[in-house]
Image (cartoon, rainbow, N blue to C red; front, side, top):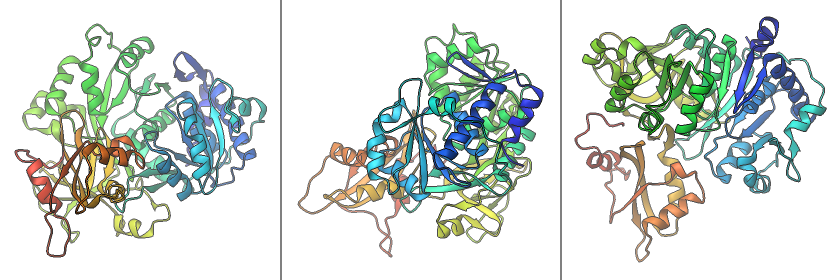
Length: 517
């Protein structure tokens, strides 16, 4: 039960099958595995020891998948860095789990100096590009060309495979630890629920640092099928790629689906090869879903609900998107618990609530995280009695379908990205004019939810909305920065002096049937 087993199987059975396609560059499993074994040797020579963390800050590419497998082949642990982070956020993640090697592509070379200057342990930098490596960085392609291939380290089961950073409830990102066994289990659970399309080509367009994208790539490796990779979402290129490469399956977040079906070239594009479209990361607007089904007849739509801490929680299958199911509202549910997943809706005391009553979703399965890197208190809060407490509020109908209606944890989901309020509030609190602040999510037509800051200024001091946003951009990624800022003379406070965020949220969510969007 180790993830590089998938490559050994492909080498034995289908060595000449194309495994990766990236903007016309094709590699077979034979070529791919040779490059993986050589890159693993180069990483070891660069200081990667068993269990050593190796980071990557890069757009999607065939090299991203080579890096993924090479780190495991050499015995290391992945640290895929969020491509939307600022230098301080990147450095925090590297320092937190002591990452000694970092792969950078052309898009992020400009951050190299700041990362190296600020990191507690300046990482070895590897430049992943067709061009010449900048001074002070190693060349990815030269390393592969010059290194001898090494044998697979064979790390697996409860060996740590990946540390994926997500927003932190305390204001700092936390590293979600997944072992080879938990990733493998999550993939098999997903494949049992939604079997792979034989002879299929899956298109990776969502960022591969996300658990959903990483899981989809691993599923494709396990199935021994072909990966087609795009650097990032761009509607015209996506349409062209589907048509040129005859894509059979892809997954998009709802904002991407909306942009795709609204694109001027959509109607003229040949999308007849597509058999399955998955969506997730945030709820989909009912109108967009109806338009998608009308414009892509014959395409199976599936919705998956999961977390970085558990890649599989529930799945809403194609049959729940049919006419009869839509009449019952099942297309707007998150589906039923995945195969091998135990799921309950509980009250504040951890007791299961009656069907139709809202409570917190808790999950138990072999695919659940083993905890947060170096954060025992947060691990203890999330993992209790063998159950993962998700922080998402929902109810379950009599048929076992899950309907998410609220968010118990203080988190905003904007365009599929998680934003923890505490992280933004910590940055806002550093502004010299801010006396008190609170961050909430408000409805947004395009992004689902937008980050909204409520600010009380210090007596005699001034700041504008632009001042607040510019301050935030110096510390956190743009998607975490407030889209809107509201200035107040005072905050609604509880008897204990805590900000009553529900009071702040109520006026923003009036007329909505649920408190998430």
